[in-house]
Every structure is written in structure tokens, then in C-alpha cells.
Image 1 (cartoon, helix red, strand yellow):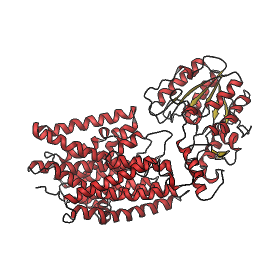
Image 2 (cartoon, one colour; image 1 turned 180 degrees about the horizontal axis):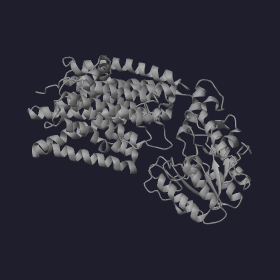
Image 3 (cartoon, helix red, strand yellow; image 1 turned 45 degrees about the vertical axis):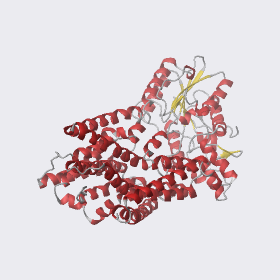
Image 4 (tube, helix red, strand yellow; image 1 turned 120 degrees about the horizontal axis):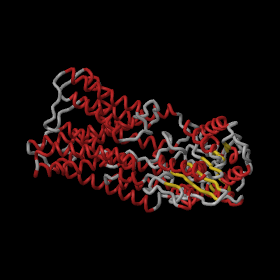
Length: 639
């Protein structure tokens, strides 16, 4: 018969650190930029406790795969299903149709333990941001649930054919997963983040700790030092690791080994550090950690969607308080009764209820998908504006040929991307310059110029430490600089610039020395959320104003002013301000002739290309050589 594991207070304290790190990070605590590593701590804890239970049952001959999955269902399903249902109701009251469609798809995948696969597939440079997906945090549940499917099967196979091979199997799988995770960061960072094979090593660290042969220290100083060192690794990681760093890979060993040290040091008895982990507030947050994790992200997502310009401090404090309250209610009235009241929630009722609720949510998700996001909730003009969120933009960027996107494995530009005629002009940068290509091409042809394009998603020009956030950026930028210096085009137009840095200035100087005229295009209008959403939500409120106002992020003007000052008087650079050429240096329009000028927060529709791109292109060819360092005045805001 299965024996429930003894209560480990220090592990609840460890859960508290993990969940509070995640929650504070998601509610905007910028002093905790690595709070997201709390998920990695959870992975180690889960691997340890699940493996400990399985090993114990196998040792006394009581292991039952049916009992194992019944316990997993009792632990995970009730709160998950309730929170998902409540989130679906709230989402239907807040989200626009395109967002609701994505929500429906994410819910369908998540209820069948594959949310992580869905969110991996949803990686899209021009797609919705994380904050627009209320079930995004379910990716970690998908990873764990898939681990629960694989691990027992492997252990049963080992027990039947090679009982002594379990430690070796865990060690080999752990190392293979770690190596694969680090390698995948260079090729497909999203896969490394979301998919089980590249995350399994964290749970397998917990499994290794649970092996029957594992020895835990008896010495009080060693135990105390291990717990203290583990907490230092975790908290230090939350303070110093950032989302801009390659993760998981080797860097995930910081929270994972930290969690392992806390478990290892606290297993044989209490010490001062482990007692500090066991104080009542820590135990409270540790016990509600699962429900707290479930409820907090829908609050982050849906509140941010519903309310504009939230005060960051109030959002942080109010969000943590609301999440804690709802997390406790879920723990007290959903988790605990189903988990421990087996007289009321028998196995038959548990399985039947879970199956029925899962199918009901799946049906609701399918209805949402088949109707394209329940559009009947809104009136015609709101729907028309909202549809621009699904705007087809490949033609604007020349995606698949001269603009390299995240999903492409072949990062070679096609021959037509680079001109063979003179005079010529080259665009270099990310999507923020690539979106001007057709407007610049039109004007370039009028002046007898051939146009070329070397652009990639999230790629800041010039190779080096700030070359860009995509795996292919350094390679693309090295190719671009080499091609430019060898072929010496007449004009190179550089975009994707928010701030100058040493490699940037050095690269511009090298281009100018080669006799190339350099034009730097400043930042494009960037909004708090997508432009179609801003216009649609204004219309829902009865507001017909189509100027940006406070929805334009103030840092754009600050960056533009800083770049103007930086390049002022530089004879090697012509600096063009998009805010000046398109917005007149004051407020920016959101639409023209009823059409949104941008389909997300920063990328243009064709109307936006005409409105912003044509005046910019005219300035490129109107600005004489030598008039460098001067921000252009508006030519025309009309297409």
C-alpha cells in the first residue's frame, strides 16, 4: 500500500521562495529581474517528490500506475480546471476576437497537457505578446505532466529488465538533456525553453536526489551550509539573472542546484536556515503555491488588457494581494477537499468529474476556435478594427526572401536581395527598417537607384555583443558588414536603432571611410499595446479620437532626441527622425482614412508604410551629401 511521504516543511519554504519570485516578477518587480527562475525550482522539487514516491512504492512492492495517476489527478486537476474555467469566463468579457481565438486554442492544448507545445508553436515575431495570452503560464504544467507520463514508464521498464540500471539511466538522461538544452539555445531558443527534452534535466536533478542510494549529510554545519548556499543561489539568481540572458541551458543550473542543495541539506533534520524556511508566512505561501501560480498570470494578463496605463506600484501590490487571496480560496475550497476527502471524492467521481470537466472545457475551446473568437460579442466597426490584428504583412517586409524570420532555418538571403546595378541603396537592420522597403524602393526607382535589403527579426545592425536577440543575427550582421565594405554601395540605410553603442559608431566610421553615405533612421512610433486594439477599445468606450496621445510610449521621443544629439554634427551620418517626418515631431496619428497605420505596437500596415515610409524615403534622396547629423523636417504626411 502506498505510504504518503512525510511532511517536509523546508520544501514548502522552498516553494514559497519559488512562487513569490515568479509572482513578483510577473507583476513588474524590476528589482527581481530573474524571478522567473522560480519555475526551475518547482521542476526540481517536483522531480524529487514524485521520484521519491515512486522509488518508495517500488521498493516495498506497492507501486501501482493507477494509484500514481490518481494522486496526480487529485493534486493537479481540480484547481487547474476551476481556474481555467473562471479565466475563460473573464477572458470572454475582456478579450477581442483575435485574442479570444488564441485563448481558445491555448485552452484546448492545455487541457490535454500540451500547453507548452502550443506556446512553442505560437512563437511569432509579429504575433501577440506574452501579456495577451492568459494561459501562457500553463507551459510549465505541460512540461511536468509530460514528465509524469515518461518517468514511470521508464522506471517500470528498468525494474522489469535491468533493476540496477536506474541510477545510470537517470544520470545519462540528465546529462543528455542538459547538453541538448545548451546546444538548442544556439539554434532554437524557444524549443529549449518550452519543450520537455530540454527541461527534463531540472526534474531529473530532483530524481537523482530521490535515488535510494543517495546519502544525506548528518553533520549540522554541513546541512545548514547546504540550505544557506542553496537559498543564496536561488535568490542571487533572481536578482542577477535577466530574461535577456540565454536560458535555460547551463544557466538553469543556478536555481536547479540551489533547489537541490536546499532539499539535500534539509532532508535529515532541521537547522537554523531550514527553520527560517519553515516560519508560518513561508509555510503559508508554500502550501498555496500551486493555486497561487495558477491564478496570478490570468490576473496579470487580463487586468493589463482591461485597464490602460496602470500605476506600476499599485499594480504590483494590488496584484500580489489579489493573487494571494484567490490562490488561498482555490487551495482551501478546491485543492484540499478533492485531495483529502476521499469519501466524498471517490476514485470514480474524481475520474468521471475530471473527464467531464476536461471535455466541457475542450468543447468550449472548440466553439471559441470555430467562431474565430466569439465575435458576436462586439459590433461591426469594432470587429473591423480588431481584424487588423491578423493583418498579413509578409509583403511589407519581404519575409521569406530578404527578411529572415525566427521560424526560418535557412538564413541565406536570396540573390535578388542584393543589387548588382549602380547607383544603389541598401537597407540593413530589423523589421523596423524592413517595413519601409517598398516605400523606399518606389522612391529609389524614381531616382534611378537599385535597392537591396539585409534584414532579420530582432537584429540590431553591426555584429558584436549587441548584434541582436535572434540566433542568426551575428552571422547576418557579419555578412552584411563584409558585403558592404567589399561592394561599397552608394547609400546604406540603417534602422533598428534605439541607442548608439561603441560597435555602432565604429561600424559607421568604417562605412564612411569606404566612401558609403550612411543614413540612420530613428525609432518608429511604439505604443503601449497594438494600434487596432487601442482604436477598438476606444470605440467600445465611445471615444473616436485617432491620435496617439498617452498611448505612445514616451521613451520613443526620448530615444529619438538622444540619437539626434548623438549624431548632431557628425559628418559621416544623415540622421532621419521618423517622429519628425511622419508625426511632425508632436503627436502621431493611429489611423488614416479609417485604416490603422500599424497592425501591432510598432509595425506598419500598407497604409502606415505609405504614411510614414514615403515621406521618409523622399528625405533620404532629398537630403544632399554632407547635410549629415540634421534631423529632417516634415515633407508631407500624405501618402
